[in-house]
Length: 145
Image 1 (cartoon, rainbow, N blue to C red):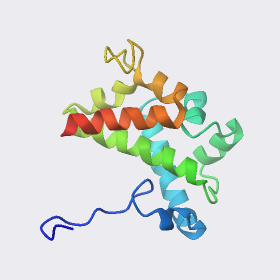
Image 2: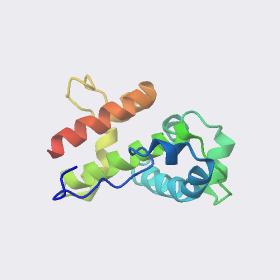
Image 3: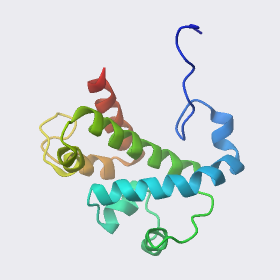
């Protein structure tokens, strides 16, 4: 490792696989992750079905429970990964676009990129599942380079 470069900070979807698999770590991250995700979902004006889809098709009652401040419990590794990807997409959009309203609307705007085929990115993020989230995250990260 290059001493001039700081070590990467582990995130929910970061390199520390052992920590991500640990139920105590997932329990500790679950509440803050869900609260952050719900703030992003509100900024993106996601419907309940869109929210459910991005979270991996949790039940509608579960989404309403989370939105009302109910106990989150320990989220699955998959759900935490999906949340991490959405938070990364949100952060990348706000880095790429100086206008916060455009950054927040981007996921629902038609997009001519071949990845989206004229559809809004949210469509690919939903229909592509976790792979769709990864594709959008990688696209935005590449644009940041």
